[in-house]
Length: 84
Image 1: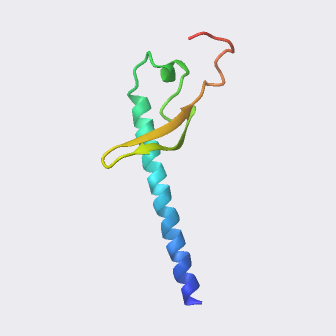
Image 2: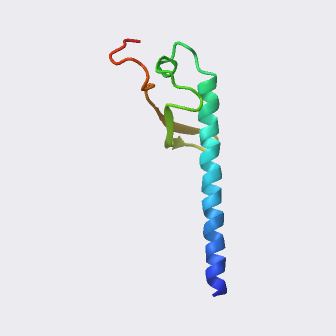
Image 3: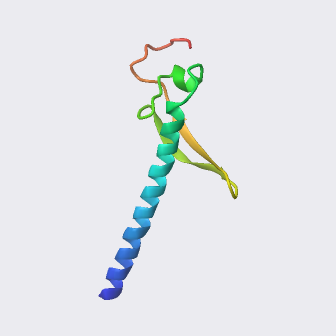
């Protein structure tokens, strides 16, 4: 029975590490969006640091650099067929 407890603790630690890793990526994206150029398509779709985007994963990772991927989408309150 004690081995199950150890396995469960290992699983809990692994899950916690993954969550910290994802939260860190989401923080990086959020910070990027806060500082985005106002002429960017991201800004034109009213994407803000805390809404209208989702983290989807890492595109590429080298020794010193990670390229993270996220999707952004138009604010649903924008009128349809608006040209930006």
